Length: 151
Image (cartoon, rainbow, N blue to C red; front, side, top):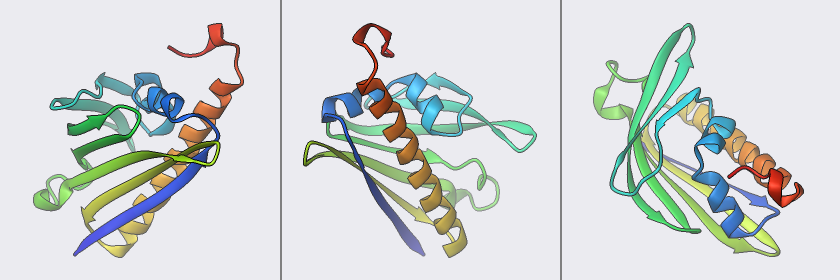
């Protein structure tokens, strides 16, 4: 069964600021349960992240399909928790869209997956958590003096 996760959050910052934070390696480390970003976001190229899965180290491999600066990031990744169990079902397609909303930005994540309802609920919770982390990173940077902001 194909399930779709769609969640969004308002961030009190301009779209450019949200985008710049979203595509930085240090932000990926701050918003997702990732310990290392080996290859980052580049349209038409693979990416590779490392994370700890319980007591063992694991990797997330994916491919960036589309990047539209300040607007959209579209990628897929193989969920390492499902690899070897149901190989065909381990690939997830994710789109992160940024739109103007009042005096800030609305960040919306859509993930298409074949999964159980329980796994779907966990993934939806994880994306809400990631968006809240992104909001925290971006809004904190908005209040820092320019010379101390992450580059």
